[in-house]
Every structure is written in structure tokens, then in C-alpha cells.
Length: 129
Image (cartoon, rainbow, N blue to C red; front, side, top):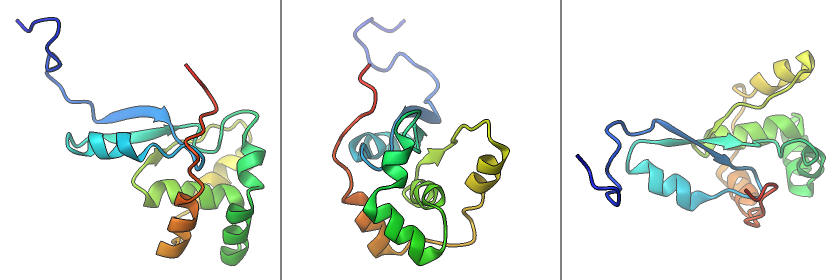
């Protein structure tokens, strides 16, 4: 039996860890740490969560990239999550938004665009639990 202070008491390595993650709080350290275990991050608040989506959608960098691709800001942000190795499952009760949110597989962000979004990381969380 494992001692209480032994970090290795779990027998099954988690496949997914859900953590707040969005363009302003990218938490790359957690993603890199979990990679050694084959664990991926599911982004909590991938579009900013209630009350914060408009700040993300109206971000100048996101809007410029969206215009370049002729896509909505939501699609740009979700595509960034996908390309950066995160799982993003945005919630919505609006059927049009649900359809829009899945329509991210017909384009890719360039390396430069990925870096532009990476530069938005302010390590700013929307929740502090």
C-alpha cells in the first residue's frame, strides 16, 4: 500500500485534465508537464466563459486573423486551441453557435498567426478558485 505522501498512488494515469485555458491564460507549463504522461489539457473556458467571450472576440489580434481567414473570432480561437494541442469543447445553448463551433477544419492558422495568439498570453485567469 502506498504511503499518503507518495505522489504515485494512482494506478491509472489520467488521459485528460480540465483546466482554465484561453488566449489570455494559456498555461503552457501545465501542458508541457502533462505531455510526459501522455495526458492532454481540456480547456475550461476555451472562449472565455460567461461574461468574457466578447473581450476575446473583440481582441484586435483575433479580429485581424478572423478577417484574413474570413472566419468568425470564435472559429479562430477554437482553431488555435486545436492546433496548439488542446481539447476545446465550448458550451452553447444556441444551435447556430454549436454549428459554427464545429466548423474549424477547413482552414489552418499559420505559424505566424499561432505566435501572434501566443503573444496574447497575459497569464490572466477569469476564475480564481
